[in-house]
Length: 168
Image 1 (tube, rainbow, N blue to C red):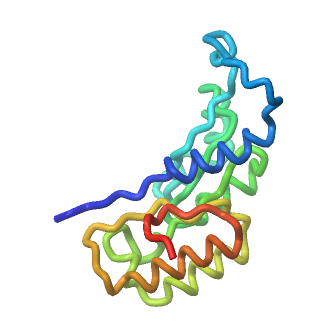
Image 2 (cartoon, helix red, strand yellow; image 1 turned 90 degrees about the horizontal axis):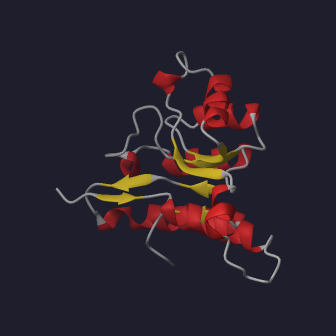
């Protein structure tokens, strides 16, 4: 089985580049060890999945981030409600990213799930997601290309990043 994991690394790098480049002062000095040590951490891969909600309420997640020096995090969860709960609690700390997994739609079958396009569109309309992903392609099936192109179009229409390697 060929498995391709589409990571949020590209999304995060692009997000950070676009955000931090707008804050650059233009002299382009290297930070050095001391300067780098004083930078806040941005966790680019957080999942707040449903099984964790009871044991780790949203306030405890932010407290854990504080204890570990994590200023902000890119969050995608299964289901998306976990991401939204964190974002609603700490909108200045959480960068929401829309993951397609919900209900019976998981990492191995999300492209075949009924209503996936409508689900993604509704979530993007209702919440301020800054990206679409992380999602997985376990078996590359060319019949999924129309959905991938629609996901790309959704991202383009909202000027957000997607984690899909196919470009239209």
